[in-house]
Image (cartoon, rainbow, N blue to C red; front, side):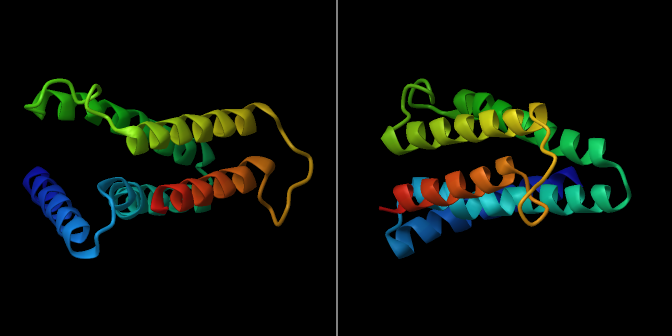
Length: 143
């Protein structure tokens, strides 16, 4: 199974690079949108399944834990990067995306700390704000 995951990751990275070349989109846009969606879909499905089974804590922990491990993947990438430090090679769009992700994490934390009595369409303020932040980030990265 681990070899299948490695092969799948390699294929996704290759497809993303081809998408950059064929569409002219920046690597930041392709990475943030398309690779982000591919990476997040399994977590989303797991979270929905856990919530439907009544395991809300499992759903939250799986998403937060997955995001924490995703951040550690930058260390793995830094080790593999032959041009020095991956962190020092970051360009403006990557720094902007990192800032947006940190802001979204802060909103998520705020939503966990502030309990609402009422929500909009069963979605709390943090869900609405996260969606607005994500769409805004994608639009800014795209242009």
